[in-house]
Image (cartoon, rainbow, N blue to C red; front, side):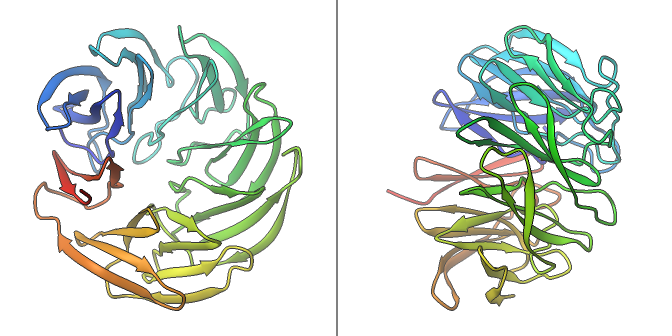
Length: 346
């Protein structure tokens, strides 16, 4: 099936979303790549850049999926049987944005949280067992912005942080109360990068002429203050990683791979040896997957990047946008209708 979503690995299986015709499916594979089952979750996004967007969320025996058109499904993760379904456009006034919903939802205790982007039901929490509405937040009444949220566990509460079209929102994950908002705009209201949190420091960033801002959370998470801002890390959708006090990632207008000091925002070093794109990290190494299809294993050194090895992804079709996933010594990369598996460890 056509799509851009990374796979999810759980329960000893591989789960990946895709589209056939205009219908979205979950494909459940064995670790050897054998199809175990496939099951439809509803209408998918078949307009500009057609295909599935979100990665399925696995919570034990339940699987949750949100389509680019707003179909929300809860399925049995062992069989693909539909347990319950909703439509966040029809039921919660959600707005299908230009390139469709692109949110991998989050589970918090008994709640499933997502962002319809409506004026009344901007961010919602549903009972993960039956889909009933638990709480709703008006947020800033803005459209969603392709963002997968992050949950931040603090001593006094769990905070949900996400982007909508022009703001970063801090919401109490238990009650839905909007605690704070911070203006973060760019040219096209596109904010796909999940914020990065460490020790009450929160980095929010996007492309299209924006860049990143470091925020400091108050002790109880009820407010934020700006620490620094810069336009170097203007990743459009390739994310970034934090290792040992340094942010690593690539830009949109700034197409370098960059190493940036977490505390100050200072660019420590950068390179254009590999095209810009997606980054993940494991065991102290960086894995770069460029929009040109280059795949590189990189060791970050004190003052430079050491590119240990590289290859090029040639199977599949379309854009090189999906984020790689590592599980038990295997690196998986989705491209179009193909899923590639690379052995990277003994």
